[in-house]
Image 1: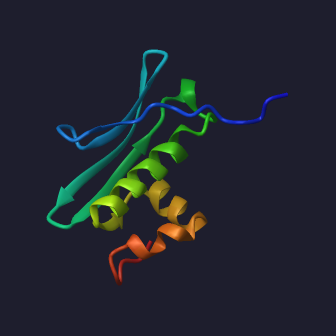
Image 2: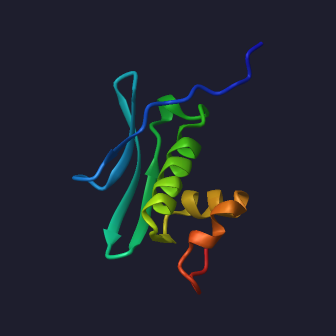
Length: 101
């Protein structure tokens, strides 16, 4: 049995402020706003039809890797992104100093 998760194509739709996965006619997103040298993650949503496939985690990883590459401070207002950072401490240094998540 193959237990590996599929790797999804993720697009950074800067015009809408969201990282996107389009799969089977559905759209999963991690929404953000960029303000100067900061990126504020506001919401992550995966349609019920696509839950349990690792999409939200892949969106979070891609979004946080983008923040690191761009040298942005992260404000994880989105509970999923905040929880992802707590589980993956390699991203903790990106969080705005003093921001509780």
